[in-house]
Length: 275
Image 1: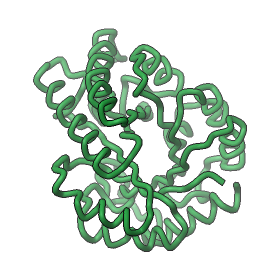
Image 2 (image 1 turned 120 degrees about the vertical axis):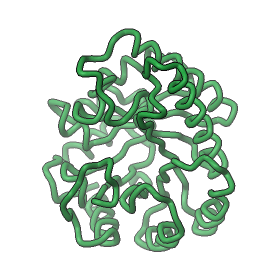
Image 3 (image 1 turned 60 degrees about the vertical axis):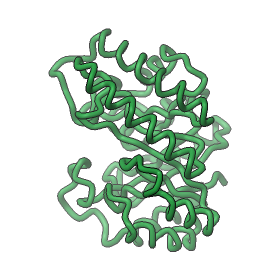
């Protein structure tokens, strides 16, 4: 069985003391790691977090999301510079916490659209920016794991093959792929086949339901998906990711589960039962 981690965006974007206090429960359920969103790049903020994950024996992972102000494919070089600086700061937080990766769709900005498909210039801006961040990440031994989003959230890349092509063009030893089953459920003909196609560049996988709720209570074909993960001899972590109304960027405006603790417990059980 691969080790399982819980993405903390289920509690919303603010990594405050109330979220920190839930790490012990997550560990008690059986999770061996937590994936922590890094929007605050002040290392002092993360001191208590490092102490708690170390105390609980949880493996930390870091993830990041770029908004309009950090858009690496903005035509404004000042915006791209802000994005690069933010991601370098997030890399430093990842290293401080002890994460091997900084994962997320930060190749471009969430929810920003031009009204057309990505241009070669936009692709080139992303490649150059990610390479600069990756050069910094290499000094910290942090791998950037890029994630594609669905067509309603991003346009630079929105399927496994497009992201694979981008990562190949970036051509950096510290840039790989994180695969998220939610976006694949929308964009791929077969999520399982997509996993197999990009396997050699995918060290990190997120398991997320079609509803963004409890795993096993939506339309994702989990036996098929989990079998494909076994087929590629995947040795990495399985990260449970779910969102609620607490994360406005996810555009979820109805109750998808009764409580975060219910989701954490039931999702963990689903993965173990079907594995």
